[in-house]
Image (tube, rainbow, N blue to C red; front, side, top):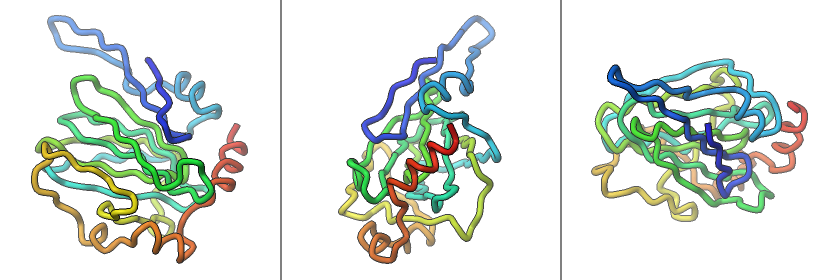
Length: 199
């Protein structure tokens, strides 16, 4: 499995080796050794989630309050999505910036997001199946969102996605500036300290 750090610290792309034959294909979409080597600490899986989305569905930008936050390892099992990592950590050198990775059932890449990073994706195909392995169980009282339409962040959604569909919750989410003013955003230093505690 090949790993590639993204431009945002704490985000890593993984591309597996695939072994095709006349029966189909085999691959390891997750393996703990290359992940731990890339992030410098163990990744404990406490919950696994799956979403099925029609083309144009936008989910996010979501994150969990730190500590403990919620690190994520995201894979598209079927179809294709454009996956976004957004740096929401106040004090980070890349605060407010984003990077995207296409996750699909061709290259079968995965993306790891450390605690404090925002996650979003847009489905590029109907019935896009996304699997998330996460480090903490879902806690609605600590789950927070930022508007994916916030012009300060400036997420770019491809024409391939078609008409966008968001949940009422995501439509009503605050902007980055509003969340920062309300004290809702994680601190970069707190996130790094929490990561060091996991090593």
